[in-house]
Image (cartoon, rainbow over all chains, first blue to last red):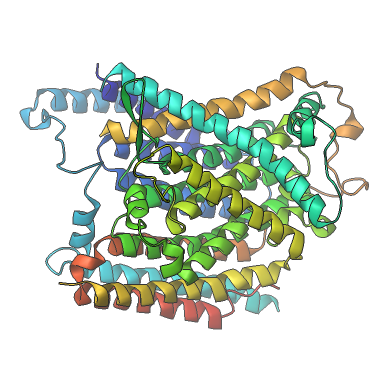
Amino acid sequence: MTTLQIVFLIIAAITLVSACLVVMTRKIMHAALWLVLSLMGVAMVYATLQSGFYAVVQVLVYIGAISTLIIFAVMMTRNVMEDVGPQSNRGWGLALVGSLILFAGTSAILLTWDKAQTVLQEIPAVNGENIQMLGLALVDPMGFLIPFEVASVLLLAALVAAIFLTADIKRSRS
Amino acid sequence: MDAGMIWEWIIKSIFLILFMTGGFAYVTLLERRVLARMQVRIGPNRVGKFGLLQPIADAVKLIFKEELIPAGADKLMFIVAPVITVIPALIITGVIPWGTSINLFGREIALSIANVNVGVLYIMAVTSISVYGITLAGWSSNNKYAMFGGLRSTAQMISYELALGLSLVGPILLAGSMNVMDIVQAQKTLPFALLQPAGFIVYFMATLAEINRAPFDMPEAEQELTAGYHTEYSSMKFALFFMAEYIKMIAVAMIGSTMFLGGFQGPFVDQLPWLGPVYLFGKVIVWLFVDIWIRATLPRIRYDKLMALGWKVMYPIALLNVFITGILVVLTTKR
Amino acid sequence: MLQAYLPLLILLVFAVLIGFLVVAIGHVFGPKRPTARKAAPYESGMVPYGPGTRRISVRYYLVAVLFILFDIETIFFLLWAVVLRDLGVFGLVEMFLFMGTLAVGLIYAWKKGALEWE
């Protein structure tokens, strides 16, 4: 095994175990934290896939911003933060068998299908990926200019909605 | 990739961590001595020559203190929170170059741990995860002061992070790269602080808020919040919060020196690469001294004023700075 | 590829180790004589009143939402800043459109009082 494979296997294990713990833990705050660890694992997978930019953006947006929002949302809701009921329903054994079959089938296809046998390609760049190309594609009219400008409108809409929701609460209280 | 490379990285990582923890110990001493002098006192001078062994005495004292875990606290998170706080502080300087490269034992050794293309984004990403430890410490303590201290610090940090991120756009615009090494090389003739005065000031103020230093030290607003998020912490767990705060202080001084003050650049650094780290630490020490000076001078700012300053003054100024720098960069580029 | 990021991973591993090591040192050497009085949350010497964790104001949530939006904007800025020299005036105009839209958002938030703390 190469170093890359060893690192990938460790990261994948961390990601999957913490993802399972998100749904298995009883305390909602712990679930949010396991989610953070899982997202961190995904960021590291991006880094092993030669995409350092997406790795850091994953950390910056999903862990730095969105998970903070989730934690604030948890703190904002009612005080009962522990679930007392069972964490799984009666059909969990059946679901396990089903997902194992699905996993085996997908693995079998990926191992036999020749299109899936591509080698990891080295992207021609200095350290990591080429940021310049990404930046140029973002503002190129033939590239992603329209999605980029539309993104600003989307962000504006989200901002207006958030302010509308919270400012309304304040008005009704006073 | 050979085994030698991996050993080199391991040694460099351990060296950086030891350097930062050692630096933390002596910055506390520096702060106590300088503050004392500014208040016409002497400060700790009994343990060792000039009090140089004082940090060790403090550490030994803290090790033998009793650990308290408050009733009703979330035990796991209460223990993990200080560790989560200290990790970002330790890893954030991994992309900062201390010099070009030196020849040691017949090996060409680069004076940086990682030279990544997205260096500035890495710094921002690590900054953004440093809010977790504080929120969790406040939440898991089962204490009202701790909870509100943690929340206030978190809201303050994410507000100032925006201005901080935008202030770093200026150096990137001027250097045309997100690689920290390229940004340092671009400052060979002129440090960016002279070309980006507004960006530099915004960076300086935003980092003071980001590391919860005076005059933005909300967690230490004793009158209203006791000790903020670390009210319930004692022993080495308290030491970890302290360590994170001071290591972050060193880290932002190092990043700021690199982005705005020319980093390891200085006279004769091309001929003698050993001078690189010396110049960098000279700048860092001056920066730390100014931080301490500000703490001795300015009173703490009220919380609502603090948030208003972040959103209504610093963020628009940073945005305007990016706007003007962009225009100037396009106008001065020869096509 | 790993050449660039493996050192940072190694650094992260050592940082995690040192963090837990420090906690462990305190745990091993510190005395442990807990009493009910000692374990009570500190409330300026008074008997603790009510639960320690309670619901927080919606303001914090609003700050977090605003942070996400402007944070994403900052990432776009950084990407744009790297290539501005190659783009010239065209890139500048595009970014000003983007910036203008979000400046409208900031002004809206300001006028609606979303940036006020009382």
